[in-house]
Length: 146
Image 1 (cartoon, rainbow, N blue to C red):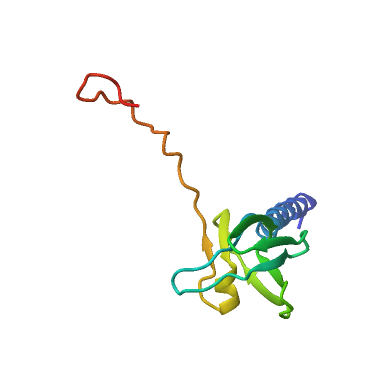
Image 2: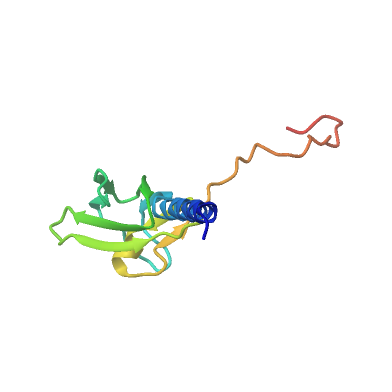
């Protein structure tokens, strides 16, 4: 094999390695927003704990009262959650994974504690009701609608 062919093969191999490394880092470090929800669940009827401290991975722990919802920014696909109770109940720990595609998820603490699936759901924000892409229409009085 000539030196030119060898250099070409090495360069092509390096390009493939760099692309593979980039794809691997993207998958391993994909960021998500995770809403932690400590609200009562209607179906099935589940009561949320009164006061808990939630730690996600190595983030700063946050306190939740019943009815609270807060957000964690999570990087990567695999996570560990630790829930400490104020009433002396032993701490609860669980590992879970988030899918690659969606950006925001909602994790229900009462569902997770009681083993109800799915306790993690994709979360969609509501669109702004005032914003429309349609031009204003004239109403029956000949004025534009607001």
